Amino acid sequence: MSCRFFGAYLSRSGNLRIKFHNPISLTNFLNPKSPKSKPIQPFPRNPTFFSSSSKMGDARRPLSANIPPPDKAERLELLRSLEFSLNSSFSSEPLLPKPSPLIIVISGPSGVGKDAVIKRLREVREGLHFVVTATSRSMRPGEVDGEDYYFVSKEEFLAMIERNELLEYALVYGDYKGIPKRQIREFMAQGFDIVLRVDIQGAETLRKILGKSAVFVFLMAESELKLVERLIDRKTETKESLLVRVATAREEVRHVKNFDYVVVNAEGKLENAAKLVGSIIDAEKAKVWQRNASV
Image (tube, rainbow, N blue to C red; front, side, top):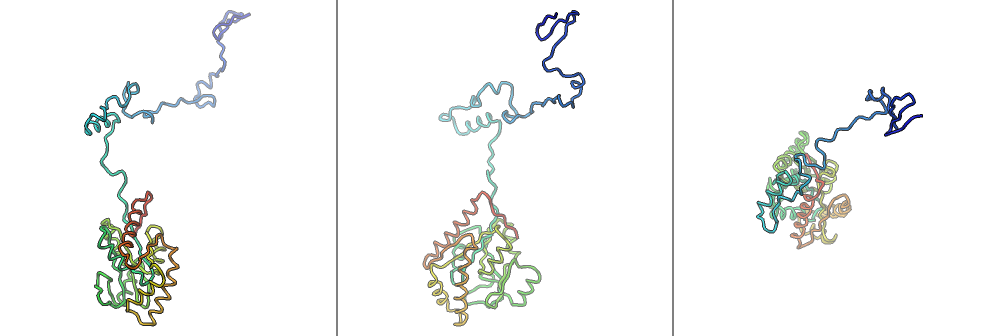
């Protein structure tokens, strides 16, 4: 006969024996690696739900205890009390980093007004560098070397190719055109956005080189008729070369699907076209995921 009390019982021999509901052997108890024993996890020093500098009693008082009424206190007083309650100072640094410089590639068929749009952009928008293209063609009346193009001889242009000084180049209507790398690097390092004016062939080459790191804008006339009229009004072509340009322009319009944006440069609406290109640049600057071009 035995007498039970509080988880123990008195045996017939009179010895008190303790009964455990989940007994652990002495071997397992002394061996922390035993599968039946679990190590004790320490409480985190800085739990996420407590401030790292919280003191005894902080949990018992509301954070707003020392904040004066917003409708009666001065701004500076409120700022300081909020900083004290949050145990941190408010930074005046920008919340987001400054956007990286962009490379904007502007292209389109001959006669669409690429030069006119770029000239207007140069007049109304700061922070842009318009890359001057090198070409082996002869200078036209009214053009300025170093502003419209860098005019070089065909031999000098081929030497630039050999020295790997060009981002891209092409043979267009019997003349070479190319974009100097050094010019782009220098101005991007100064924080300027880069504007490249190229033909359709050059834009295709740049897309292969730059991929999605650059912004590609396609300029288009309001109609095929208006485009041909502009080519005629230039009066810079022979009848043979005019025919080639018109046929080429028809083919080039089909490449619009390979660009990011399209801008219609309608006759008499140059200001609208330039503003739309500027809006495209602003939209790219406001993107969460920024393009990051390097040359």
